Image (cartoon, rainbow, N blue to C red; front, side, top):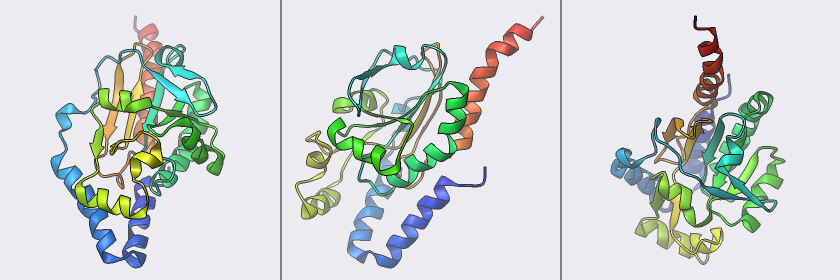
Length: 228
């Protein structure tokens, strides 16, 4: 797989270094640096943990439950921040290109999850013509359970308010909380079989380790049947 998500994100940062006001760039870089330094990895969702029932809201309307997602096998969740996030508009189309065709052929659902309300979240799906599922995690309920939420630091809050009413108004959540990017594979047994959380939102999980985790899950029953 030649396309690298993190190379694309590095190019985004390089463009910002060339074009952004240095003060604005410093706020962005410092927030990401703090998130990495202060990350509490022990709180992040981990492989082996059991996933209790949850419910997401489809952007087209209706609900998407854990039972529905894993009814026939594993499912993949990729958490992102919100529909207007520039890095997310690189990451989610990347997953569409590099995960969705293969996972669809395997019968494995791929869901991009954000706390943004469905009425505003749908724009990222229409903008990129996504065929993967896009769903809202209302009130960050699942993100909180997975331990992946963060809050804007004070300089980032001021920068957000300088552009408008703040991130909570943009997402429709009314809070300063967003999920850190995460890729999670849940098995039919309702356990996490792969989890990677990225405190720095310009560093995200590549497609290959996700595909390898899903392939291992799909091949496990065959291996068991083949054991004498």
